Amino acid sequence: MLLPTALLALGASLVSAVPVLEAKDNYFINPKTGNRFQIVGVAYQPGGSAGYDPSRGVDPLSDADVCLRDAAILQVLGVNAIRVYNLNPDLNHDQCASIFNAAGMYMLLDVNSPLVGESLTSFNPWESYYASYLNRTFAVVEAFKNYPNTLAFFSGNEVINNEETGATVPPYSRAVTRDVKNYVKNHCDRPIPVGYSAADVRDVLFDTFNYFQCLEDGKTDDLSHGDIFALNSYSWCGDSSFTKSGYDQLVAGFKGSSVPIFYSEYGCNTPSPRIFTEVGTIYGPEMTDVFSGGIVYEYTQEPNNFGLANISADGSITLLPDWYALKDQFSKLDFTKIQGAKPPSAPAPKAPTCESKLISTKGFNSNFTLPVLPPDAPEIIQKGVSPKPVGKLVSISSWDVKHPVRNPDGSVISGLAVKPLGEDEINAPGTNTVALNSPTPTSGNGTTSATPKNAAGKSATAGISFVLGAIAAVAVAL
Image (cartoon, rainbow, N blue to C red; front, side, top):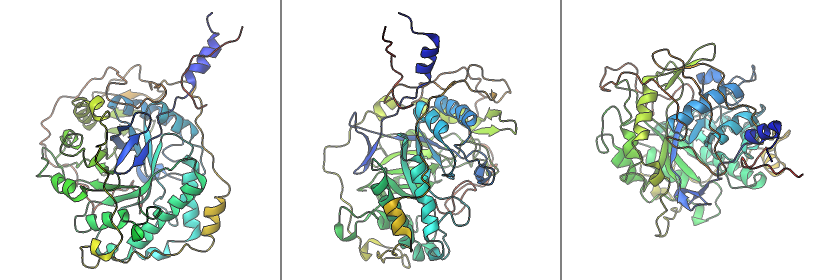
């Protein structure tokens, strides 16, 4: 018997869930398949810092129509994850989280924001480490913990960016990791990974890494130990190579990591336009034994000129040449093979014990004694934030994109919509196909059009620090 139209429409709108992933040893693992997971991501902060404005009640995941537009564009691009820097835990994110979930994309979320009192500062970090700050970071966890596509939380972003900050910040930044992990342990139904997003400043990068991955006295239950470690790296510029870019040094430096390593930002914008030749290497045999993919910086065009797409004031959006260049590089890879790889059978590397000999840079903090919790913070960790924001997957009435999306030549892309995936499906290049008018190919060796983003030039969008079920057949009882 044919199902009633209204019931069919309801069934079509239900949101299937991506598989919940685990950070196991030094890899992300899909527990349902046993396969490793490689992050194929894009930094997502439309509007830059202005896209997060508590006074107007907006953040990047608060407008369902905007999320639907962007999820469709990113789904066609082939990504499986977004990084979102600045979020307001007091807003409802159910629709946007459900849209990105249905599109097969995970969310990596910073718990900090650029506003005063909402991040750990690089200067005199002890002055910004207090209970109300921690309460806000815990509220972000509460707001997003129930979404199956919440992959990880960043407890900080580039707070340690030179030798000077390396002298004072590490104990406080690791303490925030400890505190967020404690909150996750007490209030989340699953162990959502928590870690740090580092600046690729080679003078302090590996000391930062050792500081976050070590275990106090070798204890396996040390909650201040990061579950993941990521870096914002802009060393591959133009038509570079594994060795010329210094990627070989990163692989050598992180080899033997006890936690998953990945790029939380990459994509040097000089020379311009970008050609993204690093993609083949990041997901190739030279790197995948150590790295678990990366996140391209960034989705929307801002003054720093890293955009894949340009948003107009009316909400319409134009894809830029860099979007097509990145899509072309993704299309060259065999993601069935990449995402189907099993972790090695050899025993996983063990985290080193926290001790001063791990630190090689003179002046970098080698004291692993962390600050005690501020007054009132222990009670918040025990009882939870109040009021508690609650997130859940919800049904979506339509997957069609409402805002005009244009090719570089100005023509509107017709029929653009999110393709909702089935239960346990993850997006990949070729999942969603739509007719596009590619721009005229370029050599990628053009003149410099923007200042390159590097670890010393943090972007404006980054933080100062850092109905569930399958689309199933609906049974109707007669």
